[in-house]
Structures are given as structure tokens and as C-alpha cells.
Image 1 (spheres, rainbow, N blue to C red):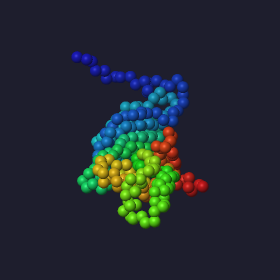
Image 2: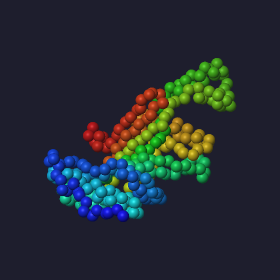
Image 3: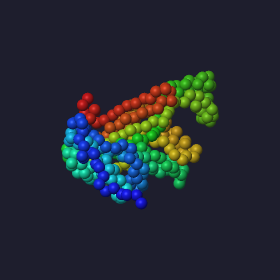
Image 4: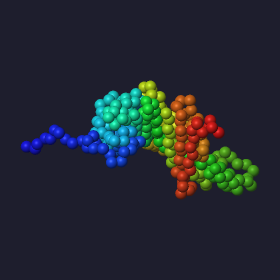
Length: 307
């Protein structure tokens, strides 16, 4: 039978660092955790990856207690749901668990995909799953707690300039076809459009908005679904999951009614979130189909106030 040793060495306590200096952050990255997300009509367990760190101001301490941090994070799978108050408690416990290191600050980041079932635009009872990448960033420094949520939302964008150029070509082709005819019936025009309206088409592309907001410490939930919905409603063209032809046609109509440059998208989202979320910061990226590079834009209320 193997002997179980009870008096195990702990060099993080018994040995001193050869270079006496404090460290800003020490901890772990990429911890795998199951956590519960619950809000409104949504409740789901998700696979999260956690980054956790504390500061190490005591210059003589060789290292922090990694296992203490791990056990604190491991307890998240036993709670009913992650909330702003819960993350505050975890950060406080992280600081308290490292009093022998003179720790005063802690931070954690949770990254996961929020899987949401979305209905088709037109077809009744047709739906599919869409994943939204989420990041929660919580910090407790000198007793000050801050929590930010970031959601990445995919949407479609059709270029207004490209649309105008395409319309001009279609218009010119129509004039070439009918300029010498005195009487043109609506049926004849409709027939021509069926054959030639796509003589030129504007370019469009899958795009993404990465939106960060500051959450209130006392908020009952994280408000992730409301944030995602706010972004999708602002752009008007969220990407679809399951579709039939009627849904694809409805999506084409949405794109035609919501032509946007990257600047338009950033301003739309900023305006749609303002007043509903605290300190919205927007980064949009259009993965251009015309160019081999992306078009990008940023927007935040602090910038607008300082201009």
C-alpha cells in the first residue's frame, strides 16, 4: 500500500523570491468551467473558459496560491446562475484568500458562446441555433468593482455605393431597351425586370459587431439577450439559421431596405443602445466581398462628448 505523505512542502511560503518586487497580476488562463446563464426566458449551461488573476504586492512572496483560485472558480458550477453580484462575491473571495500575499485586487474573465434559438423570418415553426461569442470582464481594484459584458453579433451589410452603381446600370439598360417605344405596358416592364433587374447587383458581406457595455453591480441578470437583441434590431439584418425560399426572399428585402456603410452600422448600433445600456462601445467589421481587406469603425459615447 502506498504511503500518503501529510507533511508536504510549500515553497511558495517557505522560500523567498530572489528578486524582491511586487507583481501586477498573477494567476491562470484558459480554465474550463460549466456555468449557468439565466435571464428572462433563457436558461442554459454553457462551457466557459476562465482567466483569473490577483495582484501580488508582497515582494518577498515567491508565488500565489493557484489552487485556492481554482477551487473558487470550480464552485461556479454549483450556483443557480452567474450574476453581477455573484462575480463580485467571487472577486472578493479571491482577494480574501490571498491576504498572506497582501493582495488587494482581483480580476476574472469568462469567455463562452451563448447558444440561442432564432425563428425564421417568415416560415412558421422553422427555427435554428445561433451562437453569440460573449466575454465577461470583472475587476475588483482597491475595493472598486467594475463589470463589462462584450457580445459579438453577426449581420449582413449591403454597400450603398455599390447599390447605387448597380441601379444606374439597370436604369441605363432599361432606357436602352425602351427609349424608342411610345407605349410600354406595366406587364412588359415587369417581364423586362424579371429578366434584367439583376444585370448588376450590389456587393454585400457577412459582418460583425463587437459591442461592450458596463453592467450595474446590482443588476439582477447579465442582460446578454437584451444586448444581442438591441444590436440585431439596430442593424436590421441579422444573419439567419434555417431558411426556406420565402425566408431568403424576406432576408433579401431586409438587406435592400438597410443599405449601410461600416460607418452607418456603427452609428446605428450606438444610437440603438444609447440610453438602454451604460457606456456602449461599438466596433464593427465588414468582411468585404469587393476588397481583400476589411472595413472597420468604432463608436463610443465618450468620444462623441469630447469632440
